[in-house]
Image (cartoon, rainbow, N blue to C red; front, side, top):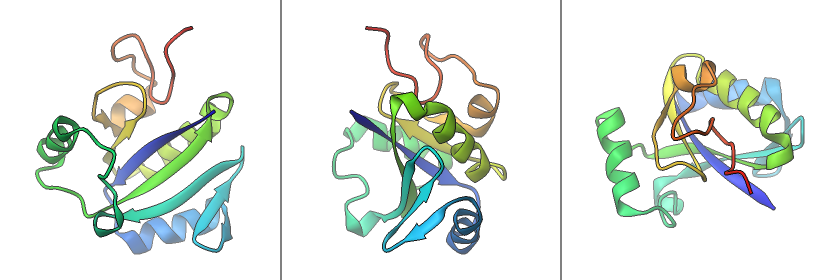
Length: 129
């Protein structure tokens, strides 16, 4: 089963594209990073928030003082969490926030960089079964 994370870097889209070009293999409409971890840019007008709960969108708006118009969507298998986190850390090197499929929380760059626990989970980490 694959999971998703949405990363909202504090850098320009052009800088993100350059960084992804250095960290991942470009394919039509996406990048593939080691793992493999699949990555693409998602625009607000291309259904960025279509599956989001309204309260999560509101939390994101408050966290960054506005609704982001684009994000980096990262698709990964839980067994490849380390690779996903490494990529996310690179994208957040200048700051920003991220959201994962497991915790209703807006993850700060610092929380992800330090592998902080929120509600007994780390960024991108599923609940124990």
